[in-house]
Image (cartoon, rainbow, N blue to C red):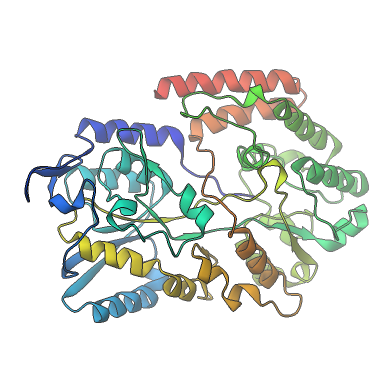
Length: 456
């Protein structure tokens, strides 16, 4: 199952809040008078032209909940950077990453005290970019894109206050998507594991085989569609929202009704535990008990099974999650940004690029305590990801995701929890047989549009 994320409407709220405090970038004449998001900044931080200046001075680097587990690694990166740049110092702070992260980050931006280099998610980066608080990295260093996977870099964009597409973020680390399954259970169901399905509906057909063979002794997957909306639709290249994100359009695609009809059919036929329709539990526990044939799509799940259920791990294999109409996977990377309000922007930009270069990304992703993947081409080509020995599922998952990320994009549909829940509720009614698939999709779009209109 794919992890749920804070999305669209929250971004809209943040943009409004930031705009109220003053947004955009402006440059003055000579060496002064420049502003970023309402804060006075050095002229070189804004407008056109490559950033220049000595890499000297102290900056603050903020991560999100990483210091406890990875203190030695990042302290080492900082030490190496400071050694390479005498006169530059980096103060590392770590945000707990709780549900007030965005609010506190907004407050820092409005107070003109945003950390110089900051680890951001897509939603917060979108809002800060719109309000002019982040350095335009693509302009300030024309070579900044070179290390990154081209598709990932191209899709890691934000929109500024004028509506222009800009690169204010460096893609840092990301997760991946794999098809995890119990080979014994699929063999009993007559599912051919030698060839992974190429479409979501093909995967659903395999779920149906499990339902018919298992007769309630075990299941294919979990029922709650919250884990699949909008992930499945994205993979099928079904447009969930309009281009401007202000209206829902998924009902316009006939495949959406087909998808809901499949979900209803699978639930009725017993492919999913009946009590999992509204449960927030992912398949971790049931899969580890050998009661669900398909596990989470997160590659770290494979390691979870290895650590918690060796007997099931011995029966576990990984394959390619269907690419379907999209033709590749999507990721939700963590980003590194540089504050346009930095008083030592040359130091901040140099450190951001150092932190996200191939050498440091590869080194961190090799840490046995982390299951993340890099975003640089050289890192993904490293033998650590490419050379797999034996038939260990976790190693296979690592190689599979590394290959996927070479063509992956950062584009994923952003839905606020309220909009997502409204859509899910209608699909659940269809799965229970209380509505037709067509009516559920129609009602889901209407309810989603009501909420999107309210959010502005």
